[in-house]
Amino acid sequence: MHATLQYLLDLLDLEPIEQDIFRGRSHASVIPRVFGGQVAAQALVAACRTVPEDRLPHSLHSYFLRPGDPGSRIVYTVDRTRDGRSFATRRVVAVQHGQPIFTLSASFAKPEEGLEHQEPMPPAPDPETLPTAEELLPRYADLFWDPSVVELLLQARQAIDLRYVNEPPFGTAGTPREPRAQVWFRLNGELTGKQDNPVVHLCLGTYVSDMTLLDSVLLAHGRGGWMTGDTVGASLDHAMWFHRPFRSDEWLLYDTDSPTSQAGRGLARGRMFTRDGRLAVSVIQEGLMRVPR
Image (tube, rainbow, N blue to C red; front, side, top):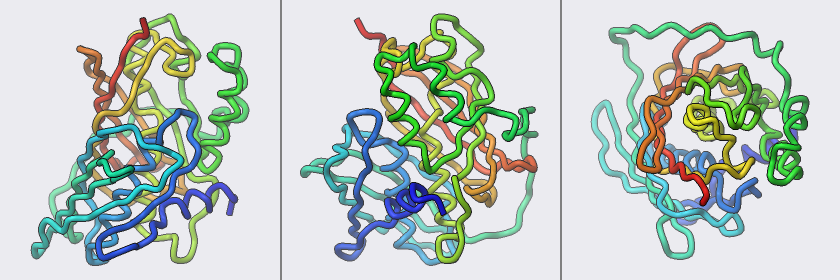
């Protein structure tokens, strides 16, 4: 297993400090705050630790309240809101320096049979035909406000093999495009043993879901994002629905679009499909989108 993947798995393995209270650490980010996908994934891990193993999360709804401090531990407190015969509900508050920085509500359900349909997977090239991050990102170093951003991005994503289907926003900054983006992603390694379980795959999918979701908003306005210095942004809320099982160490297509932006906020929608076309996850997020003066 790649060392950085083990580091990510360790990051999600929270320390229990009291009943329904857990503590997590952070890793260095390319931005001066805790990566939103990390705190969301850790909060989901905390919630999952308090429900029976036969119930898996089917949805989560969360709000980013304050920027997290990557140099300090985060304490996650879980409220066991409800335990029913088929469903369970948990609420998690993430705290740093005595203040809440993030809240999450998650619903869990027992597997059952029922009516089933899904929209088809959109067309996309095979992931193996696309350049890796190591091949792609150095091409744009001259466009970034600081060329060292390339190395920081590569370090932040070492555990994830993430490949852009189209030009990323920073590659076509200045030219508005259709507000739609696609990436393929998978872990840089295979999960085995105790780490190969549905909860870990769900939490790792949650971690990655915040990486490129707002790209489609940037594309609509020809903005390159924080890396080019033409936009200031942050995640405001994040919602996910887990439809079908998936493996985070196998290729997933993340197809995103943006139906609207206004009042300094942009809305992005995402869908994760397994390589054989099953709709695994739906995601919606609103993000802060401001143009620097």
